[in-house]
Length: 158
Ligand code: ATP
Ligand code: MG
Image 1 (cartoon, rainbow, N blue to C red):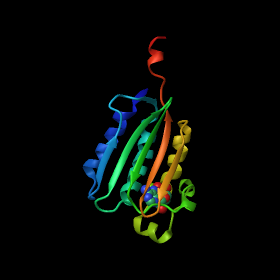
Image 2: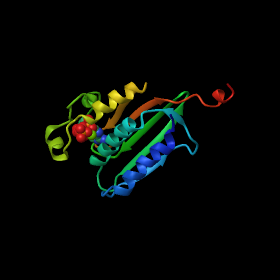
Image 3: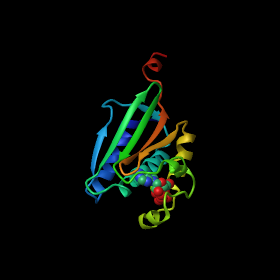
Image 4: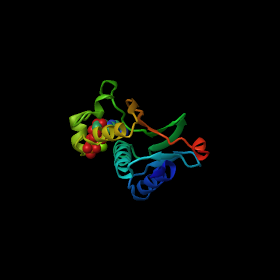
């Protein structure tokens, strides 16, 4: 029932790192100790797969994709950053709407339906978390999401 998020996340990143065809570098900044969360692994896999696919889809050759996990009290914050074309400010919230895509020409070339992040938002919300984006056009994009972490040490004494 309890999943070590660090191990779970590392395995997903490994899968992308082994199969990616582009010249893109992965960088991980993850704690070296386990952080337990209660999640539906299939659904979280779907969320993370989409975010990483987007990061790769919009990354330039030679770009860097960074993965980070930070603890903030009883929540963990996960972020995935790329050095791609970025997202205009006015579109930043809209990318989580169904079928919303930043620009039609760009999107047609890139493929996809515009559902990935809408589904991600639904699934993260259902897990008690939040999801949002920060981006600078021409520099890159970071997608953040949070998940409640299971209270650790104290519980061991009960
Ligand atoms: P699908 O995920 O259904 O295959 P999609 O990737 O186009 O299609 P979303 O994942 O929902 O759809 O993303 C919505 C839109 O947000 C994308 O079409 C793209 O315009 C923009 N977007 C998402 N991630 C990034 C990113 N890392 N860099 C630049 N634009 C992005
Ligand atoms: Mg997508």
